[in-house]
Length: 481
Image (cartoon, rainbow, N blue to C red; front, side, top):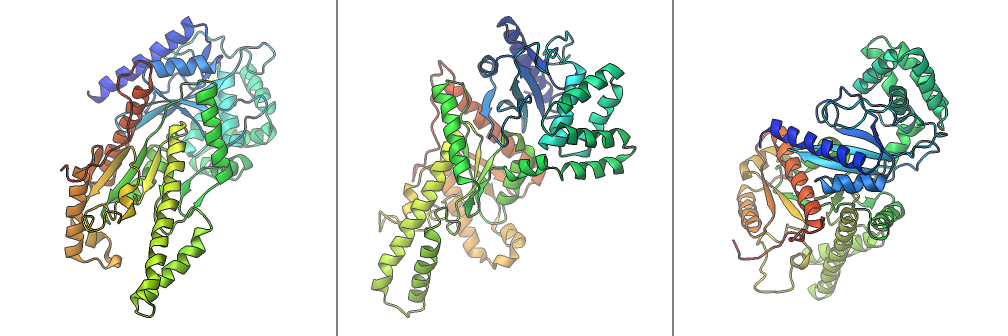
């Protein structure tokens, strides 16, 4: 299916959802300009609805996967923030529809939001009144911190300048009614006076120096390195998600856990960073490190150093091997348990509908055939480690690995053997996306994001009522090449 047909299919689905909501008596209004074209001028749509549950059910029924967003900031008085997202993948891009519930009450500051009869020409949803749309964007940019690029401010400036006098007064009063609205209006005045790109760039830096922007950045939940940022917060997020899914029965979709594997120099880390911070940032992906040294349990860190020191002394022949054997196996068991905890926590996060998990340094180092499994059935413990939903395998010739990682002092013969073993292992696993590590970063990011989004849709499809095929994680069948 070519790109134009994909866009046509997406717009047809959005129009179908709009008709479904209208026929169900659910009011809806876009908080975006009618001139915006999804996936070209913006990658997300803000949609206000009078019934959030009915809206989620409609989007889910027509092929969107539903995300419960990590609650990075509590809802503010009078300003409902979006906690649900309807997502749809087009190639390597994702369209997100942020769903916000606003009841149609006469005393609400949002009164009149649903009264417009104008519709978005592509997707069929009614467009909310201009004064509310401009007030919403102003508050989100300058108080909540949802601004990243100067071009966003340029578009907002143009919208303010096109308002008539009465709509300008209404928008200003709406912003002022929100908490910290007065501070947002100070930056709004600077926005109106900005005459060039330099002034907008300076204003963007001012917006990033506000409490709203700093809070947004501080509350980014990232599972990586040696710490889970906000362990208690993460546990509360998962509990909240399971409450919505299994108690309130919201049709929230599960997300995949994707393991990124391959030899050094293939582009794993740079691709993960690009996907998490740019191409798929709208899905709030979590990045998980499974490196041994990145212990999740604090108690394990000093114990690992102590046990590692014992094994190092054995390598120098300064301590008896009989004393080292228990220490070596205790270290193996600790590393296995620690990484297992990280894996199950990330799987809970994904399955509860909070977003995909990108797993760096999955436990394939010893699964590549570089151990004598036929001599000792228990070693290595990694052979009993659970599988993720899918693998992304970065294949790169040994010569390229040496060229890209000269500081690692690799041995060419060893790298060739490792690559051969990786190819054999990936042939034994049933769900693998193969990436040419010598391709351009843009092509790698495009193909990888398209694969991840296709897995998201497959999982969502398997969850919908009447599906004959239930989702299962990747499987490894040694010797099945």
